[in-house]
Image 1 (cartoon, helix red, strand yellow):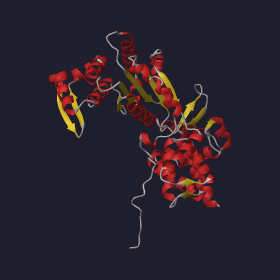
Image 2 (cartoon, helix red, strand yellow):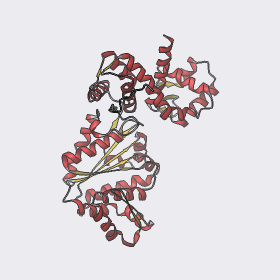
Image 3 (cartoon, helix red, strand yellow):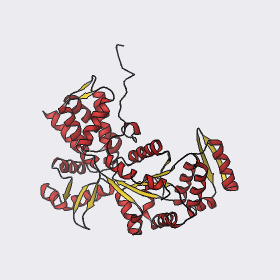
Length: 401
């Protein structure tokens, strides 16, 4: 069999996973804003930051970069906890305490677990370099009620090794559905701010969807005043250009002007799409110069990859093929945000079909209602859907040429 493949060739892109800090690009202003409050935290004034952004905007990658950066520059211990799928404060505080205990030497961590929690420990498990433990319900309630005391005690064990602690709580979304978390966090922040028994060099960085942050503020108005805040949206064209140039340069590849324009246009400033287009273009180009032909093929291939993993599983829930055609119509007519009446006037469609379509799209999270209640205005909830149909339209036009 006459077949050759370069096993040493490796893509510099990382689609579908949080980008490793050494390959992170963009978001400089957001990162600088987060870093402003590192020194106050280290000096004992506990800081709180809430990072919001829609799905696939790179919140986790930003948080991970900050964790590595302050670890290197300021000798802060950073722990990352994903709250995805959890709506229990007790479970969240247990996860955070477990993550912090894992910053102790393993033997010391096990010993401290036994000293601190005694008979409340149901099991301790060593998985590689990580300690996992299970405790009884009484202790998990205690973690929630006296969280600051546990953090204080753990910090006493590591304070000779670090300038402070960064606690990242990602996907806070599940805890935004009730007032309990807003009240608990407000009490925690107030206690750390006014109680002289605490002078903890701790920085809390929370991440979630904008509507979840707004929901917590609606439950407790003063919740929002606790946090420094930033919202991350699509990256600018200049940031996308720098991303592609820098990343391809890492592997000795150059991009022609028209190829770069194609890649930037169809990336739509979306981190996930940028990574996937970069990955697909890398494999579409077999030499060091990326042509527009490579870029076009890569963009089309990227849409299939994104579609199979992110889009089609949702679209396949549609029972009507007409619904997908309506989505395609919206994109082809540049209706990223639109009024119900605009669609009704532009398409031969009944009120009943349109109502069912809009209801189903909102239910699936493809579209969302915007403006005041019953405004009849909608938009794509995530630019990823809009970009996907845009590329499908582009692919169709290419095949017709």
